[in-house]
Length: 79
Ligand SMILES: [Zn+2]
Image 1: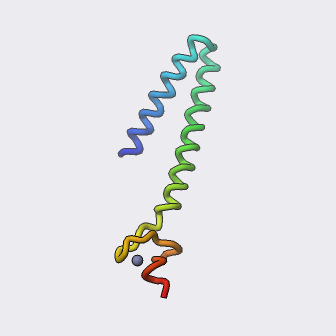
Image 2 (image 1 turned 135 degrees about the horizontal axis):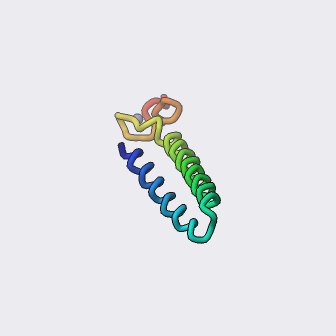
């Protein structure tokens, strides 16, 4: 739900940029540039999301709260 809202904001933002560009560029060029910006941002956000997931995806230890590494808690499972 949260992601969809952001997606909508992105589309609206790109649309405004496209309308702005249409005043100085041919509409076809403005459309192409707007689509490139849209997919560029999608790729950028996707990469960042993956990076964040890699960092926090394994979660934290329920016992001590340390970050889980390789499915093990570095503090509780080190023995
Ligand atoms: Zn732990």
